[in-house]
Image 1 (cartoon, one colour):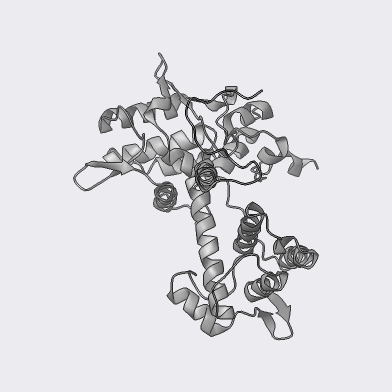
Image 2: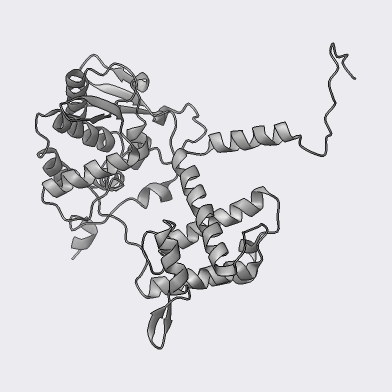
Length: 350
C-alpha cells in the first residue's frame, strides 16, 4: 500500500545510498566509536599512507594487494637470522618516518602495534566492501607464526604488575593536603575502589552520574564503558564508593567546589581549577604517585584494574561480586587480570 505524500521530493533508489545518507552513516559510525579508538585508527591509517608513499613512491589507494601487506610485515617485524635479529625497513625510510612524526623512534615496531596496524587496514577494506588483503591465507599464516616466534624469544609484551592494597596505600600516603594532593587521593581511590576503572572512564567521570548516600558514601553510575559500549542499563553499572573512597571524594568535591561537569579537573598554578583531566593525565598521576612512593616502575593506570581483581581474590571476594564491580561479562576476561603472588595458597600445598 502506498501512502499519499503531501509534498513531492525525489524517491530514493533502493540499491544505492545517496551521498547525504552515506555521510550520515559515516557520522553515526564515528560517533559510535570511542575517542581513543578513532585516534588510534587515524594514526594507523596515516602511518600506512606515509610508509606506502616512501616505499612505493606513489599515493596509497585501496584495495591493496596482499604482497604490500606482506612487505609491511617483514619491514616491521623482527626475525632471527644468522647475524641476529633483523627487519627489512630501509634506514632512509625509517629515518624519514621518524623525522615526519609518524614513528616515535627508529627500529622495528612493537608486535602489538603491528597487529593493530594490520587490523585497522583490514577494517578499512571491510567497511568499503573491498577484497581484504589482510585475510589472505599467506598473511594470516605469517602473522600466526610471528606471534609464536616472538613468544619463543620471550619478546611478547609483559603485563603490568597489579596495584594491590599495600602499594596503593603507599601511593595514598604521598598525597598531602594541597589541592593536587586531595585530588590525586580521591582519583586513585575512585579508580581503584569502583572496580579498577580505566583511565578514560576516570577522565570522563561526570557529576551528573554521581549520587550521594546518607552515610557519606556515593554511588557512581558508569553508563558507558568498554564492556558496555551500547550504554545498556545494567545492575552492575552502579559502583558504590564507600569508606576511604567516599571520604576522599567528599573532601575533593568540597575543597574544589565542584557541583557539575567533570569530577576530576586540572589544577593550575595558584590553585585554580582547569578543564577535565585527559586519560593521559590520569596515567601520569598514577606514575607520579608510584614514583613518589618509591615503588618500582612496574605500575601504570591499568595496574589499578588488575590490582582490584587480584586484591579481591586475595581477600576471598566472590567472583560474581568482583565482576559486578569491574563490569566484566565473562569469567575468562576477569581472570586474565589476576596476577598470582607469593600469597597464593596453591604455592604452599607441600
